[in-house]
Each structure stands twice: as structure tokens, then as C-alpha cells.
Image (cartoon, rainbow, N blue to C red):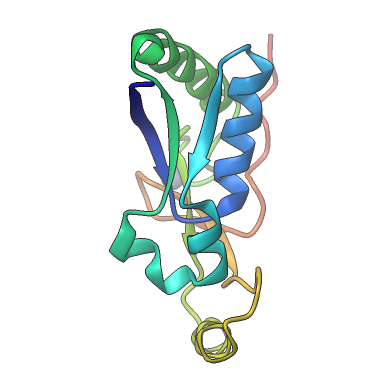
Length: 137
Ligand SMILES: [Zn+2]
């Protein structure tokens, strides 16, 4: 079976959400290196993160589907500062997070991940929850 990486993730939450969305849309897909990254998040950069993999002959169809799904969900988010619709999930910059990362690494703890925040890609605004969903007309 010829497989192709369609998307990569640095945490298993986003990876599994995307996996579930695609499977719900009838796409056969799976996650590669999910357990390695979950067990030792420090390896994520070294091995290229968690990979969402699909059959090569479905790549074009899946990319189109993902574009449609992502733009539909992006349009509903609005940055309170600049009105942008683009948000990414980034690790929160704090001392607590550094301690969590060190503890996780030392004890090879499961699923103890650093806190993340949603960041506006246009102005840098950060929020612990996704910003208000715009009214859909
Ligand atoms: Zn913004």
C-alpha cells in the first residue's frame, strides 16, 4: 500500500481530532509515530511529529477535503484585537511549562504535556480558549 503524509502534528489531541474528522468523512487513514511522541514529547521535533497518513491515490481528494473543513472552521473564529480568522495552538511561555517539560522528560510520564494557548497568527494575541465564534448568518 502506497502511503503519503498529509499533515503533521506536535500533539496527539490535534492529531486525533483530525483523524476522527477524516474517518467520519469516510477516509481511510491512520497516525504514524503517535505513541513515540506521546511517550516522549521531546522526540517530536527529531522524528517530525505525529504524521497523518493516507493512501497515495486518495491524497488529492483528502487535501481538498481538509481545505474545505479547515476554512469552514477558521471563518467562525474572530480575533478580538485584529479580526483575523487564523489561530494556531502554541505552547504557553511560562516557568511552569518548563518545569512540566523537565518533569515529563525525567519521568518519561504519559500524557503530561505543557499547557498550550491559542495564538492569532496575524497579531500574536493569545487566549487560553478559542475566541468567540462569530455569528453565522
Ligand atoms: Zn489578531
